[in-house]
Length: 260
Ligand SMILES: [Zn+2]
Image 1: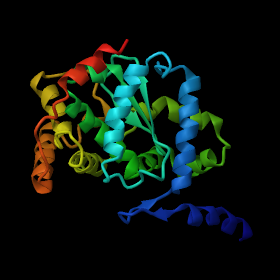
Image 2: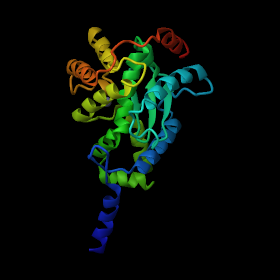
Image 3: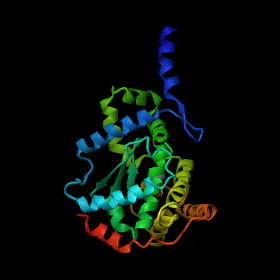
Image 4: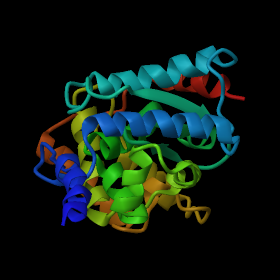
């Protein structure tokens, strides 16, 4: 009897209702710790070709500028609760991902592929939303299970840390989380200089070019890309936000030129 109570107690304290009323297994502090641990493991693993800030100061000035524009939009719920950091990965992959707590990772392949900052800001908004709305801890719980993650947060499972660091770039979110991240990206960008439907621009480009390469996280097949474009524009209409391109062509070209 005693044993079962001890087993249950941590779960009661760990569950917290988020602002949107959904039940989240992690506390905000655990999200933060999680982000720091995964960042360290990603840096140590050598699996990701992380660009150093000292070697590429101009590239980081650019990605920081875009990230901060979204973080300072006034629409990010946990702007001040998390230690937001962004990293560039030198790799051809069309991808970006985020950890809880929050560390953002953007691949140079994605930046080079996109036509303008508005599209990149749209994808960044989508990734920021997954962590800000705390989808990432939901997805990790589905993938690894509550008990395993409990061991992780207690620092008892180093192998799990390695597994998570190795797979977080391809974390599978639920369909409703994907839709919410797209819609939230529109809300964030609505208070920035960017086209609030920037994320749609990215999908349109992929669809127009019939890209058949690897499917990046934010282009997961549910909901399908056509529907996502429609939904993003519908959300932009609802928000009545600007879908004009920001005038940042020369800045974006300089950003691309600063990459390896
Ligand atoms: Zn996503």
